Image 1 (tube, rainbow, N blue to C red):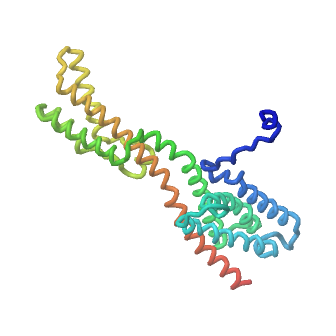
Image 2 (cartoon, rainbow, N blue to C red; image 1 turned 180 degrees about the vertical axis):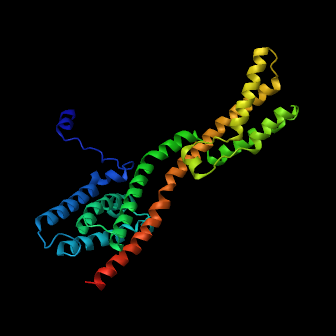
Image 3 (cartoon, rainbow, N blue to C red; image 1 turned 180 degrees about the horizontal axis):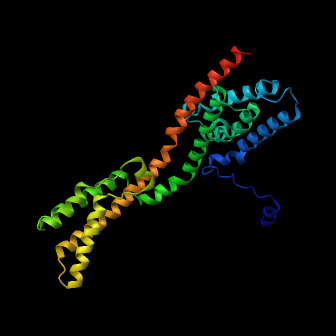
Length: 295
């Protein structure tokens, strides 16, 4: 029985694609399709010899322009496609994979369509907007590949509301601990309570730098006071408790700010990608209309 079993081919379990990334979906099927399309476009462009020179007004130019325009319109439908969840060859993962790779093939198709002729006109505007859409999309691919892991690691199983609640709890403890202090020390605690921003400006969220943070300034001042007291052998346990709470708040603020910063970087590209897509469609319509009006 064992001998017969060993003589038979062992059937392999189907490959688990549950965690397969959209870039490598179906063994990078859409990357291969995009490479083939780009290679064909280059071959057609290289093997033709229009007069006076290659450009959008030649037969090849019109062909590549039509393909590029249809691709742009199809790629812009990704927002609608995300609202419909299906499986199989037309799943959202397959569509997203095609969106990325075919979008990159537009660089080749549109550049050859222009015949490397750019100027200050609506035609070049459409090309520039297309490149902005593609480059912002590339950043989006990077963001979704890297940042969710960083977001998860930083959270440490805490949600954003829980992070903010932890900071509020520390503020309540600081307020209570500051009651018996003198005016100078109490003002430092007030600086932490009233002069602290968690989110801040876009620049602060992106860089994670908060040079005017009230808690940071209060922490530095209290550290200096406590250090001087320890050197003199007259440490005030009330200030030591304040220092401990300020340090805990600094750690909680750092975690919350990192969380908000990562979320900002994860979403920022959409504020460029989506408006630029609508502007591209408008410029593309103007480009096509102008071409046919003066054909």
